[in-house]
Structures are given as structure tokens and as C-alpha cells.
Image (cartoon, rainbow, N blue to C red; front, side, top):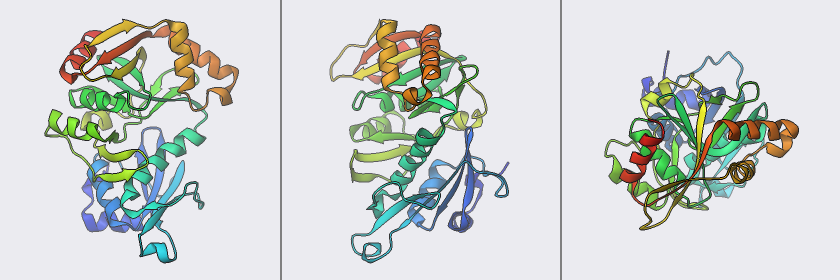
Length: 301
């Protein structure tokens, strides 16, 4: 199996310039770019991912390239292309890789309606999956990154993908998106963590992506079973506290975090209800990562 990291820098850029098929969990992306910064970030963060057969079918055809006209050179901007059209406004050139990541998330969220899709992270330990929905600023991605770097298997940082037939969770272990202070927190947490380049002053603040662990990528074909839904909330100086959350309230919160709950109609309701039924639901407050990690280990012991 050929991985992206096995390509040399020149070959990687040449393959991406004409289009390279990247297998990411259940999806196949054809990624195309002529931007060296995007190629370098892909090689750094997706080095363990397999390269698919260019002759096969792909789910999503995506491209990030400079805009035409004066903005190609003066205050340079880039566009994200999907199937030959641009669903977003251009961004400044040094946000190109972040734009690719956001666009890849959008491809799944906007089109993969043969699954129930939640805006939540998923990690697995001891055969038990924990789903982490998170409001902005709740500390979801920081906690996700720390758990992954502590030996948990990452299934996804942004998108919980649930099979409509059996309720299993499909892995989509792409780079973890960290923002603002979380970047320095995770750098200090594990000096072995591998980061892409920083995108400063985006609409989300400073953004940097963390490479998924080899364990997470190697097990990208193994589905998981949900055991817990944990609603994290980071607050400075707060004690570490894990408290049961009423299932009716958890249902409503999970439904609001679903990308296609309403689109799936009755099936969306039934799948969400089945997920809540088979999971323990918790509110989790924390301020210190070591204490948070200990509580999560106890949760799946």
C-alpha cells in the first residue's frame, strides 16, 4: 500500500498538480493543487494515508488554487473548487491549507446523507467509543487532541459518521483542527506532536492542524460502537467534574449538532434516539488536561 508520505517532495507536488486520490476513511478525495504550501502540509499531516487508484471512482473532486486576475499577485487569494465550482468566497493565500480542510469537511457534511452526520469528535479506547459534541470554545478539540496523543484512537475530530443500517461509527481520522490558545496547550502537552503551518487571522482566529496518530490511520477500516456521549466544557480554574446528563436533554442537544437530522426526517429521529438509548450521557467540566484524561480512562476502563 503506497502512502502519501512515501512520495518524495517533487513527486508529491507533481502528483497533486494533476490530481491525487487520497483514501480517507469511507471516502475517496481527488485532491488537486499547484500550491507548494498545500502540498507540504498534506505531506506532513497525511503522510500515513494511503493513495488510492487514480483509475477508480472518487467521492469528491476538490482543488485549491490561486484566483485569477490581480488578486493572484497583489494581496494574493485562493479559491476552493468542488466539482468545477467554488462554493466559498476566496481567502488569503496563507489560509490555503486551512481552506482545503474546511472544504473537505463541507464535502461530507453537505453530501454524505447516506449517513447520520453529527458535528462532534469521536475517540475509542478498549473497544468503547466516546462522542464529544462541542459548542465553540468548549474545549472539544483540545481534549480530543490530548486523548489521541495519549493512546486513544481518533475516529474524527469534526464529523461523527453513523451508519444508517446498524448504528456503527465510521472512522474519518483526519488532522485535528486546533485554534488560538489550544495550539500552545497541545504543543506543551506532547513535544512529539506534529503540526502543519499556522493560519493566522482566519474567521476562527489562529488555526493549526495536528497530524493524526499512526494508530488512528492504521485502523481507519475498523468501525466503532458508541458507549458514551460527553458534553465537554472547559472553564479556567474549574474542577474536573463528570455528571450524568438527562437523556431527553442530551437528545435535543445532539439533534442540534446534526448536519442532516431534519433532512433524514423520521430516520434521523430514530437514529438519534437509538444512539441516545445505547449511550451513557454526561456533562464534563474541566480546566486541567491531566485530570481530564484520568477521568476519561476511568470512563472506559
